[in-house]
Structure formats: structure tokens, C-alpha cells
Length: 544
Image 1 (tube, rainbow, N blue to C red):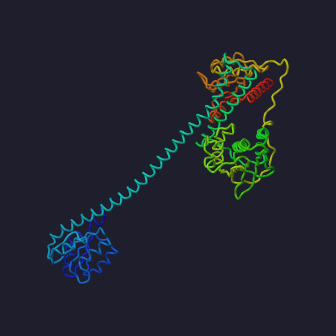
Image 2: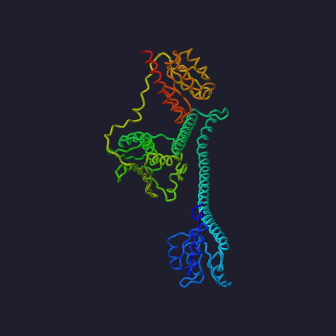
Image 3: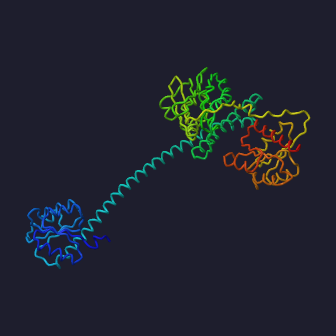
């Protein structure tokens, strides 16, 4: 309860001084705080700078009469409870007082006992007015809040509908893109496996090549989908560092030139720029390879692709220009949407439609920006910008060929080494068996689960062990731990060969201590290289 509720403040206005003083004293005795004025002008001036709960005013006064007093007072404080008192008891004057906002009308002379209930009712009315005003204010605030919430809800619903439509479109496109290479793989595989459809040796080679190409395309699609999902979810880990642009471009040149020569496209790389950029080396190269591949694939015959690097303000800008057919304004609006190939599929060029969407996400994840300028019939220019960094000395690029270790030459009559493959899937087992059969230096041992693999390893002491991860009973990681903890088998290099290819899987593999972690599908060149490295490692251990 407020102080005004404990002791109400009454402003009394009456030009009869004796009556004014008597009324002030009587009301003070009944716990009212009173302030009296003999004219309306002074009373209104005081009301402007002070707060009162009640106004008790005479009706007939020389300067401001009671009607004018009530009007002026309520214009200052609309919640003020006003009571008019007068010796004139006409109905007309009472009606006028009520019309301007008076709550009651008291006829002089009156006893204190008759006025006290009137004052109590007036105070209750004032409190109701204040409470109603507060409730109305709260209601308006709640209404505004409800309107805002409804607006947010509608916006969220609209966004959810858009997201659902985008998801449905994405899944539909992904289903189409996955089924297309699968159709080739399964179709040609059925032809090769058929007893009724006879094929020549050349046809078998051709069909096998189609299966390999479709499988490679399918793997690229899966990898790009996984990369896109990782970037969008923020799960992709980036190793940002200062990188010499010349080194990255040299690596891209080594990888992209064979495709350009095949298409008769001239590629002009910026050289000796001395510029550096703060980015993830692998992902920056992935971005540039994607842009360069597109510029070559969708170029015109004997066209050109140019790469320019320059400082533009506070940014380092890399531009990839081509002399292709260019893109229309409508195509540019959807250029970075997943699975949108902008009608380029009519060129009969292999592609997933995910690359540019992934490129945009990768560039933005590295705190950069990407854009495109294009003119139909002239060509397109993709640009990526990163905050510039200081210059660092350029080192010679490491080409893909120099990164590959040379396979050791096979010696005639060399002693066969043994490889144990722990795998429960018959098809995967058959594939590796065929790969090992093509090597004269290896013999194959197999085990269908982890426990049997441990027994085989202890019994035969193979030179190398190839281990699946998803095995029945104990998995490949647990099997690796048993082999490592056993002094008899701890020295044998164990290579993981698995379809578990997510970053968490790779991290678990590294912690488990595998000699190398290979992911399916098998890259035959990489497979043989890793086997050779493991055999060499095993031989070096024996010498030591």
C-alpha cells in the first residue's frame, strides 16, 4: 500500500475562508492530509507540481467556479477524484458537475459524518480508475507483444515451409543424382554377370570402364554431400594459416592441366605474385580446383581460362575467368544452389551440381566472400576475396607426382610376404583377394571376425594386417588393441580398411594406432602404395 493510500491527500478549494479552515482541520483529524486554497487559480498552480488523491471544490467562486476547477484539474490528472460542494442544490448544476467528471455532489451545510463516506467512495473510485488504466496499459502491451509473437510465428512457419520445400527438393535431386551413376553401375554389372548376354573382351573392358567412371562420380557426389553437410553444421575443422598463393596455384596447375589439354583449353596462371592469404590450404585448393574444373568443362572449343591475383583495397582477390557461353541473369540468381546445374547437363558434362554450393560455404567458412560476373556469349568470372596478409617467401610447389612414393620394383623369385585380411563382408573380401592375386609378392590369409583374426595373427604371424572396423563380436578398433597389447603381434603394422570415413572415425582410427587408415571405396593405387609402405616398415623392424 502506498503512502497516499495510507493518508489520502485532499486539495480543498472554497472562497469561504472560515468554512475552508474548518473543513481542513476536521479532515486532518480523520487521517487526511489537506491543502486548502480560497481561489481556483492558486489551487490549479499547486496541482501542476504536486500529486493529490481528491479534489473537494466549492461550486460558486469568483475566479474559477467548481465546474471549471474540475475540468482544469482532470486535464492535469485524469485519475483525480473530484467532488463538488455548494449551497445551491439545483439539478442543473449537479448534472453539469457530473458531465465534466465530478464523482459526487455535496449540499452545504453538511456534517463531517455525511462527507466521510463520500470521500471513501471517491478514493475507491480513484483506485479503480488507476487499476483499470494499468490493466489497459498491460493489455495494450500484451496485445502488441502478441502481435509481434504472431508475426514471428508466421515468419517461422513460412521459413519452415521454405526449408521443408528446400529439403524435399534437395532429397529429390539427391535421389536423382545418386540413382544416375548407380543405374550405370548396376546395369553394366548385370550385363557382365549375365549368362545369356554375350559380350566380347573389348565390350567387357568398355563396360568395366563405365562402371569405374560411374563409381568415381558416385564417390565424388557422396564426398561433396558430406563436405556440404559438415560445413553447414559447422563440424568441418579448418586449419587457417598464412599461405603463399604461388604455391597453391602451382599445385592446382599440376592437377588441372591434364583436363585442360584433353579439352584443348589454354589455362593461364598468375605467376610470381608474391602474395599470401590466410586460409586453409587444402580447402582453398579444393575451391580453386572446383572453379577451374568448371571453367574448363563449360568452356568453348580452344577457349582460355585465366587466373589473376591482385590486392583490392583491404582484400586479396583471386579471379578465375573463362571464355565460355556465360550465364543469364536468371541463372545467376540460383548459381550457388545445391544440385542446380543451370541447364549445363545438356553439355553432357559430368558433374554433381553441388560443387559451387560447397565452394561458397567453404569460402565463407574461411571468412572470405565469393561472387560472379557473367555475360551470355562472352564468358564468366568467378572471384573470391580474403583479407590480405603479409608477403611470405614462396616455396616450390609439391606436385601430386612427387607426393606419391615410388612403388618398389618387384624382384624375380622374391620371397612372398603374407597379408591377413579381417573382413566379414564376402564381396569386399573377394575384391581384396583379387587385388592381392595380382601381386606376386603377397599371399592372402583371411578371417571373418576379430577373434578369429587375433588367432590367425598369432598362428601365422603375417607381415601386414588389413582390418575392417565394423566387425561382428569385437570391432576392428578393439581387435587392433588386442594385437597391440600382445607382445607376439604388437610389431605387425595394421592398416584399417573401412567405410567409416567421417572426421570422428578418422580421429578414432588415429588414436587406435593404425599404421594407415584407408576408406572405402578402394583407390587401387593408394591401396598398393600403403601395402608397400607397411611391408617396408615390417622389413625395417626385422632388421632392427
